[in-house]
Image (cartoon, rainbow over all chains, first blue to last red):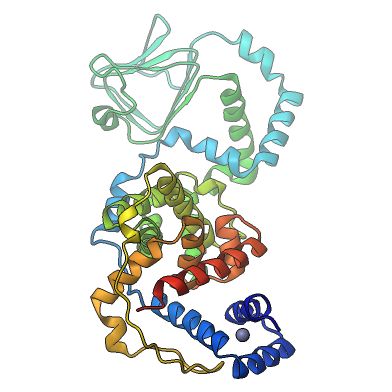
Length: 215
Length: 187
Ligand SMILES: [Zn+2]
C-alpha cells in the first residue's frame, strides 16, 4: 500500500464514516507498521478536534427583533401573487375555465360604466365615487371602472376594479397611515384584465371551496 | 422540532409574521455561526445572517415543504456569504506565520479518543487562533469544513446546501482536512 495515495485516501474515508470492514483492517495493518502515516492520521484527527472546539458562537442580542424590524411590509393586495405561486396548476385551470364559460374578455371591454356596490349616501362625480365626510359605509365596498375618494369612513374591505384610490393630501394613500384610519378591512385593487379574471375566479370559487380562508 | 418548524412555516406562508419570529429565534445561532465562521468578523456575519432571514421570508413561497427547512435556510446564508467573500479582496494578514511548537506526541491509534484536555480548547486565545486558521482556508474548502465540523451536517446535507454533488463535497472535505492538518500541526 502506498502511503500518500491509498493510505491517506482510506484515512479520509474513515473520517467520513465510509470505510468498509476490509478497508478498515487494511488501514489498521498499515498504520501499525508505518510511523509516517500514523503521524499523518493523528494530525488529521487532531485538527478536526481543534476545529470542532473552535468555540460556540452566538448571534448577537436582539438579533431576532432586528430581523423582524427589517422585514418588508406585507401588502395585503399582493397576497394573490403568493397564491398564484403556490397553486400554478389550479390557477391556470381556473383561468381557463373562466375564459371558456363566462366570456370575460368581452365583458372587460364593454363594461365601462362606473358601478358601485352600495349607493346609499355615496356621491358619483366624474367617474369618482366619493364617500362624503360624515358618512360611514358599513360592510364591504366594490367600485368598478371608477376611482374612489374617501372623506368619510369605510367599515369593511374595499375592492377597486379598474380604478384608483384618490386622496388629496397624500400622493400615495395606500401606504399612508392616515388612510388606514379610514378603512377597517383589506383593500384590493384590480387594474389589469388578468387581475380582474382572478377577482372573478376568486368570487366564483369562494362559495365552492372556501378558497379565501384557505390562503 | 422539525414538526414544530414545519407548522411555523405553514403559518408564515399564510401571512403570519409572528410565526416567522419563532423561526428566526430558533435558527439564529446556527445561521449566524455559519456566516461568522465563513466571513470571519462579527459585524459582517450579523449583516449576512440578517439578510439571509429576510430573503427566506420574502421567498418563503418558493420553499418546498417536503424538504428540510434548515437546508434551504443554510443555502441562502452560504450563498450570500460566498458571494460577499468573492466580492472582497483577500486578507493576507491571515497567512502570517505563527511560531509552532515541536515535539508532538506521536501516539495514535485507530480507535483512540482524540479529545484534547478541556483547559486547552477552552482557552480563548487558542479558539481565536483556530478561527483564523479556518478563515485562511480557500473559501470552497472553508464552506464544507464549517458545515461538516462546526454545524455537523452530513455529506448529503452539505451537497444539498451548496448544490454540488456529494462526490465534490467529499473531495473538498478531504482537501480541506489536509489543509487544516498542515495549518494546525504546530498547535
Ligand atoms: Zn504509510
